[in-house]
Length: 124
Image: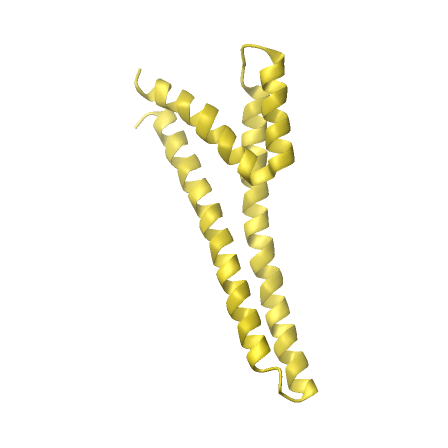
C-alpha cells in the first residue's frame, strides 16, 4: 500500500470514529438522564449519589468526543495551512471554514480537498 492510500484510510477511520463517539455520547446522555428521572423519587441522599455518578460518567462521555473532534480539526487545520492553493483567498477561506465550524468544517474540508487530492495521488 502506498502512503496516500494509508493516509486516506487513516482520515476516513478517524472521521468515522469521531462521529460514532458523538452518536454514542447522545445515546449515553439520553439513557443516563432517563434513568435519573425515573429514580428521582429516591430519598435525597441516594438521589444525590445517583446524580453524582451519572454526572461523572457524563463528564467523561463529553470530554472524549470533544478531544477527538479537536484532534481531527487540528490535524486538518495544519494540513490546510501547509497545503498550496491556487490563491491566498482560497486558503484563507478554508482556514476560516475549519476554525468557525470546527468538526463539520474540517469534515467538509477533508471531503472536498484532502480526499480528492489523495484520490489523484493513489491513481499515479
